Length: 157
Image 1 (cartoon, rainbow, N blue to C red):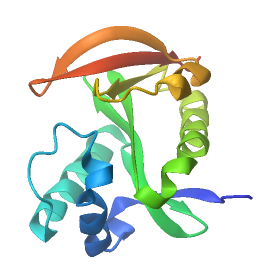
Image 2 (image 1 turned 45 degrees about the vertical axis):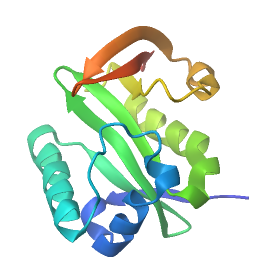
Image 3 (image 1 turned 120 degrees about the vertical axis):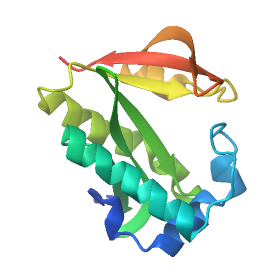
Image 4 (image 1 turned 180 degrees about the horizontal axis):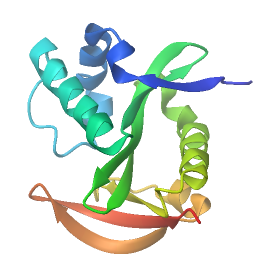
């Protein structure tokens, strides 16, 4: 089945849809930096921060759509001199991760600003085969926001 994956600005998504997404325990189970409940105020702050990335860096996180329906958010956020890729899908879209990641990585390969992409995953993520299939190599553990993450790197040139 063709998914017709497209990327849009997060600000185009109804805030209540984002609240529902980010309040789902199956989604937040592997998000150790998510320590507070999400409401409309949290979403407003979140959207403002993501728009600031677009303004500062010319790139940021997208709303991800499949057949025109919101299925999550993700994309590239500059962390220092590195472009980190993140992906947070709705529970019903977990199976689309590989196709969405491939489309995003294809974008990175075509963008001369992005010589490589990093990925940060919490140690609670045990299935790392998708990263290996993409060609990402483990770098080790890092501390981010007081939390340990597994860091991977994928060359795009």
